[in-house]
Amino acid sequence: MTTTLTCVKIPATSTPLYSIIWLHGLGADGHDFESIVPELRIDKPENINFIFPNAPVQAVTINGGMKMRSWYDILEASLDRKVAVEDIYQSSALLVDVIQGEIDKGIKAENILLAGFSQGGVIALHTGLRFPQKLAGIMALSTYLPTTEQLITERSPSNNETPIFMAHGTMDPVVYPQIAKESFKRLKSMDYPISWHEYSMQHSLCLEEITDISHFINRVF
Image (cartoon, rainbow, N blue to C red; front, side):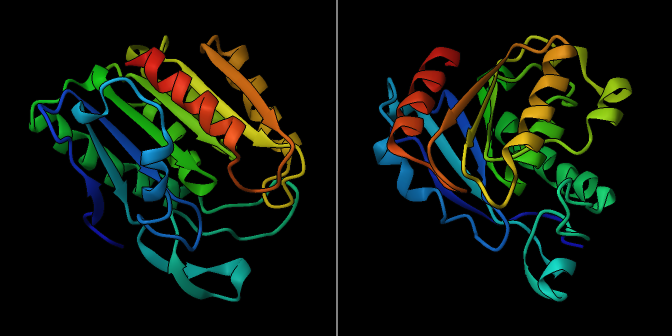
């Protein structure tokens, strides 16, 4: 397993005060969401570090064991998508190192936002809600959380009040909307300040969603 993550970075052009760490989905890489940065209407973008980590390359069972960038192995293409939970913990530990790297550069933990699409959203949620210091927020896009049961005992009180933006396509054929909605309900029942947004799209992003993402970033920063 990879011991450190390589990252695509768009550094702040002025004094860095905030960081957004954005994780891609299965088979993509850190360049996947690089092009979204100019589309985000964010206040003071010159003060934000954008970091797009590359997932480790590993075999993915549902893809015939083919090796690709993946945050965790998917064992079954069933409705609830049986996954290798130990991989989630390993990738989460790698993400913690990336977060700590930003803190070490002088960015306050409370000014760090985690974002993730699909598999990346799983890692963003799993890591952010367990992180020992308060974070700015978590964006979980076209994703769900297979480790909500473990979260009951593993959650970090520091992030009990961290806002969560959860967004999904109503026609998503990859991560079924009902699975995502179930994760949303579980997190809401655990008293997290989580909001649900849905769009007429498949497993992707749309312009309306990007506008809502911009509003969320401006609110938490």
